[in-house]
Length: 514
Ligand code: GLC
Image (cartoon, rainbow, N blue to C red):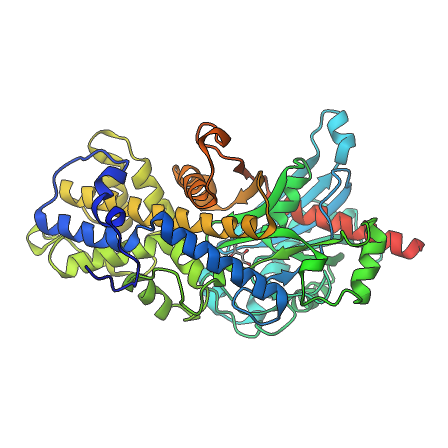
């Protein structure tokens, strides 16, 4: 038996998909579809031995990124030197440009005081705006104007214009969740767009400067003091409350993680760099134990195609994306792509007359629209416990204008499971690699993103794969949990960004006082 994807085939991967599946059979599949499923499972199932191979290569790429610039995984320096103490206080405005929405927040940090008074540690007012599709492939001016306009509206609506002025501006933090090179915390040169974005005029440029210019044009009383990544935000937000936080991870439209690395492990950083000695002397770190948050940007893992088992569907997604050859790992595991993989398989089955065949007289045009199916579609199929799968039928009707037969429902459930299981097992590899490299044995992975939060079975599958690859013993594990667990990063991109802003303001004050 051979596989176009070059994945190792062993007894386990070839014979046992029926035993592995958690789904109860709803109806028998015709032989041709049953054979198809076995063929697909053969390509999508990643056995433990393959997971180990992936993690071992992953560790090497993480090291390469720390050693030198311009490696597959960039391991970006963030200038966030420590985890928060939990006492940080202040009021900060934050902007969060993710893959789908722009969020503007006003965050009040109360630190321990708030907790004592029973108010919780922070308060948040926020507005969310959907990013227009044309913006994602347009010009930089349109993007920054859109953002500046929303900041202006937020200022008015939340009456902030009465409290702040250009002489006394409101501190602003920007969660810019794309790979960026930072020379300072308030600067971020975009390396490449990811997550399907393709806005002209930003790559190679300082996104902070471009945003600042638009904010100034409108004379908005804000001072942009930090630019952060969503993974770093998740880690810092979680650590504000939870000292067991080890990693911040995003399992959503994109897939990435951040952790605190010791400065001595970041070979590409000059330990005598003034900015490091300066920061360390102001944050009380003991010499030799200084740290730096690293935004891995590991969606780019295996861009040289050495180890990941890519299928022809993954190859097609890559070839038709705005940046072919980039974000190989992300294109197999992140939310933006899971629905599209599902759609490509269904279209292939359609073209071969195996589903929605002509006798059923259905209009299959919508199914041919790229990216019409999102991850939510797959989550809902996997979540459907309704009698005769009425919810799945409604979903096909509302999204694709199709009325699936029982057989088509059955094959869709199997495909949704197969694609999501592969995604979750791959997502575990990134975290396993960080833990292996850093010799982390236990702790909390603060996770955010639509796949982590909304997919009903993601956490369990992710935990199982992590346990397989890290070799957890039964006695180390609780019910569906191991020594390394996923926790939810509450408002990571807003709260985390505000805390980093407060830490930065504190650092500046100490520096001035020096
Ligand atoms: C993409 C981005 C990365 C982000 C991740 C999750 O991988 O490049 O910066 O952290 O998506 O949003």
